[in-house]
Length: 255
Image (cartoon, rainbow, N blue to C red; front, side):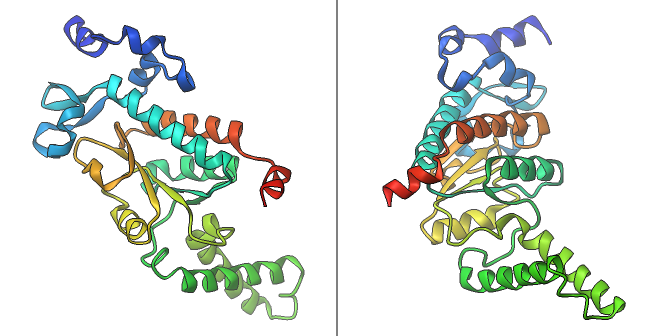
């Protein structure tokens, strides 16, 4: 990396680095590649205020502004988690599926890591019926209720369960529409954002330089392609959730 480029990245960052909110570190953010945007020819006009420079036709996102927006997002997540509200993670890109699943399971959050099913929010009642059917099959399997079927029939039911697991496994404990969704890639999961907005669900998203940040209520201007970038952001989310998730007794007292 050239000294000129380093100067561009670090210019006026000293004050930001002193901040200890959520332990955001600009050095770590740069190493994770949060600052790399798309080619300058693919830039969405509303992302221009968050672009610092261009390097080899690639837009460089201002990490100062990324840190500011990430802090806003983490504060919002801290607030909703401490209030016992539901957050749904959405990330269906092949390279981040496992990260989404691991984060969801670690934090006890619902998640969608496979293809977004149209109507997940707008036809939630129908989706819930499919989920109950899936859970019923699981209960029968786990309690030995499938033993009465032939080997061929059991194999067919097991295959059906695996298919339903891929579709609904991450949201099978979602009893009602979530309060907030966090979409990791706006272009890939645009339908999820549209459904959330239609149903009055708040939207958090990573917004790369080719995205329209105004589609989200809270957004993080950052690279949504690199696994390292998404992982950095999800690790921060995980820290906030673990620190602020209320105990069941706390929720009962509120009720």
